[in-house]
Picture 1 (cartoon, rainbow, N blue to C red):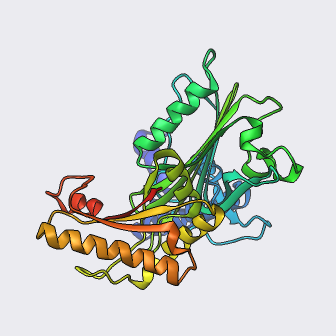
Picture 2: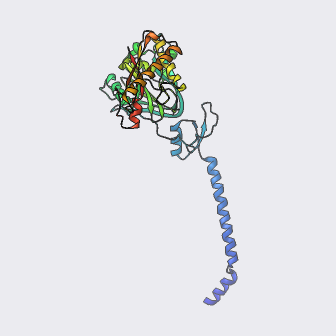
Picture 3: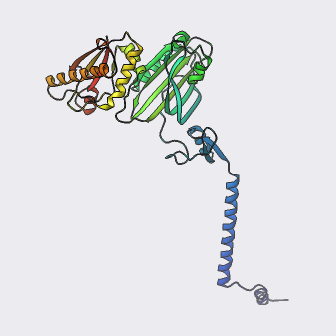
Length: 371
């Protein structure tokens, strides 16, 4: 029999102790092996990980793929690969979309946002019954709601109208029923094909279109209400450029029809003078177009100033500016002078307090008044 000391000697003889150099070498080998195995696993993961193809601007597709931890390959509408949108971290477009609160009790049926797309914004009806639309571009948000029961189309549409006005937008078109709204003639010019609103065969529907500047962006909103559903489409244009007209003939006509007068944005003068700047031309073109569409229309052009300075000087300046606008429409755009009057109101008709620059800017304006 072996004693304890004999067994220990036998074990040491059979399995000699590793030296420090051997321990380090074995550890290094194990580290290299683990790194190699890890790289193989990662390579396999990259090969098997799902890649989702999203059309550039389809925020929902990118958002859902991101939530699932999937890679995103952006493509254009023809399926060709394109670069990820700038500033979006390879995912969705930055910034929250402009939203219109739904009518109380409504439920979302469909909701979709494209970071950039074109949309045919319905602003009237042609003489042949087709829809009159103009293309607007930008971030497009389309939401389809189920209406709550027991509510009329008039009630729902009026609430949306109030909400849009409350957000600072102005109405550019509204109508009710097939005869007034149109879109019933040429199949290619109906509401579904033009505006993406499948209103059905019934005649109880109402449409409201509004637009304006929110922050520094042009926003256009189209709302269609029938008995069962409401379509809300919002288009947010790119940041407004300085020196651009903020009006169009359709918007001018709608506000004149509703309230009898409209602020004419996009008119610029040299400070303290009645000299029209070149940037005013775009707005004048729209006024001329408005008057060509309606040969019976007569307008009074009214100039307004803020409350800074001498009231008599302000009155004279406001009249001179109104006369300058009238002269430009007659001489440069061929509008008959008998259809236009000019008047200066000075600081007598403010629309905001003059105690802040924002208020004074609102008061310095030119208005068109229907005669």
